[in-house]
Amino acid sequence: MKRNDFTIIATLIVATFVVVLNETVMSVALPVLQSDLGVPPSEGQWLTTIFMLTMAIVIPLTGFLIQQFGTRTMFLAAMTLFTTGTALATVAPGFEMLLVARVVQALGTAVMLPLLMTTVMTLVPEERRGVMMGNISVVVAVAPALGPTLSGFILDHLSWRWVFGVVLPIAVGATVIGAKYVRQIGERSKVPIDVVSIPLSVLGFGGLVYGLVSIGQSADGTATMPIWIPFVIGSAGLAVFVARQIQLQREDRALLDLRVFASVPFSLSVVLVIVAMATMMGTFIVVPLFAHDVLGMSPLTTGLITLPGGLLMGLASPFIGRLYDLRGPRMLVIPGTLLISGAVWLMTTITTDTSFWLLLGANVILCLGLSATFTPLMTLSLGSLKPALYSHGSAALGTLQQVAGGAGTALFITIMTVVAKDGIAAGDTAAVASTDGVRTVFVTAGCLSIVVVILGLFVRRPVGQQSAVTPVDDDEPEQVAVLT
Image 1 (cartoon, rainbow, N blue to C red):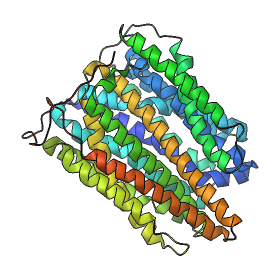
Image 2: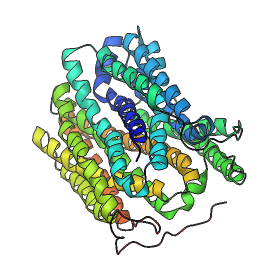
Image 3: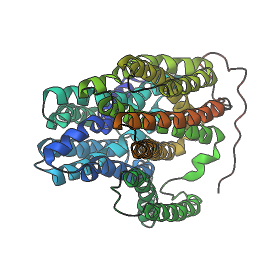
Image 4: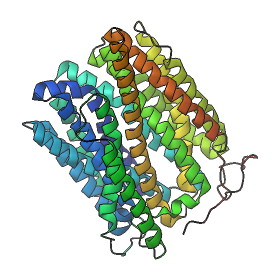
């Protein structure tokens, strides 16, 4: 790989790490923000809800936008938006301005990960993609794990504004460096945008994500509307959006080309990533809440639960990528899914006296399993596509990851809230009821993890993808369905 290409990818990795890190810093900061700004939880949670909604709406458009405007233009637009939003959040005088800042941040964040993965698939030779995707796994999984730790440390010493202020100079630096080194990569498309697809995408993906968020709000009595309304709107919008894309892709005019799902390795990998992502994001939200509300840990101590696992993922991911290049996905995905399942079932043993070390140990095991799973799955999924579909594959993968994260968070919070309320109604103390709720969450997650383990047994390297040494004996030819 050329030196200039390496510089481009390194710049994109740093920039993407910063914007993804911003997604989870709010998990610890939200209670402090609500208290300082004088808003109730039902309003304060919109700081995370609006971010997720914006991401879900924009990510499906990124495949088309990258092909239309090119990598350099989209990088500069994304980082300018993110930096502007971060600056606004740092100086926001009140809740309303902070909400606007979160929308602007999300507009930039939504573009970066699909842009990074598309660039890697275009520039990196096939036999080196595993190593590079290992570095990307640091962004996908380590940044969310480090977010609560960073936020907890800042809140123990500084104002909540520094949660954004610390990120701002890094974002500015990445933007300046990218402006110098990032260039246009790949062929650009001149196909005009389909204006009908945009509102359908907004209704479809935005409606579903809002519906998922509303499940948790309904459970604690803060929902603004019946939860069936956004689900009906989202489902209808998504159905029409899919039909429209299938029609447009025959002329190569689709906003999100669904032919990526014609690849069985891509589809299977995406399903595995969805379930693993839902488990990861739900766990990263529930464990800090349990540690703070039930065990009485400080924000910093709560954030430190995720730090060792995040650092381990950062150290392990490049080696895991190298193993993928040498031996293929199976020897990584199968033990990785078993580690995920083991960590989740370990968390079902929590009590009101659970130690910090049990939570930390379970998180380390979970993070190691996620690292061994995400890297090969992302490499396998995009590597099974034709180059012309890389950007659409990245957009589809990013969209479904975002929806999965929202689904996992909504499912876990709802189960925890409902079980805890029933326990209090039955006469349990708040601590005992909350612990029962969290334990039920992880029993549910454990059942989902079994699905991940079973699906992991079917992962194969598709024919045509060669390892850095010799092909693995158990690889099977890729099966391709027809999607027209």
